Image (tube, rainbow, N blue to C red; front, side, top):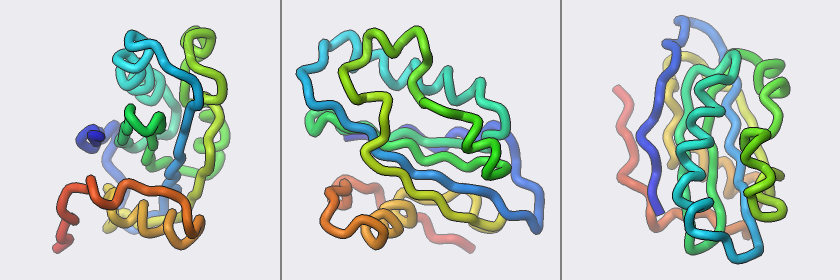
Length: 146
C-alpha cells in the first residue's frame, strides 16, 4: 500500500479549469511477482507519454489486488483520448481485467487546487460509490492548502 509522490509534467495555467480522473483497477487472479513489481514502472512510462496530462499519482494495493490512478488532464478530450492505462505490449502479461477500470470518476478543478490530494479524490469516490472499499486508513495526512 503505497502512493507514488505527485508527478507534475506541466504546470497549470492560472484561472483555468482542468479535468481530474480517479480510476480503480482490480484483478482477480493470482498475479506473478514480476508483473506486480514492474506494473508501476510501465504505468509511469505510459502516463508520461500521454498528450494533455498535467500530472499523476499511482496508489498500489498489491495484497488487495488493486491500484488507483489519480491524474489531471488539460481537457476532457485529452482524458478520453488516453484510453487504457496499461501499455499495449504489456496487456498480454496483465491478469485478466487489469486494464479495465472497476470504476472511474472525473470532476473539474481550478489551478488553485492543483495538484489534487488523495484525500479529496477518495472523498469524492466515497460519495460517488458508497460502500466501495477505498484505502482511507492508509492515506498520508491531508495536505493543508494555503
